[in-house]
Image (tube, rainbow, N blue to C red):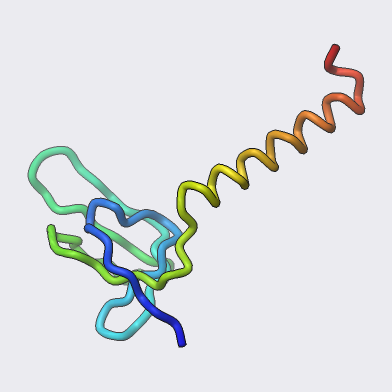
Length: 90
């Protein structure tokens, strides 16, 4: 069974799977304009929603900061390994 978590509208980002009316929408862009207008989230099908200020439900398989950190560390290690093998370091 897949579960959802609740986040604040300001936390929504591209890649999140937003649950709206029981339908999943993979967010491809979040447009945040200066001033008092609400952000707009869009998916790849043309669907869009004004986010407002309330909580949103997203599917729980959202990477967190630690997952991002591990992915970035692996990418940096791979880049360094390539540079060392090419003699670019040292």
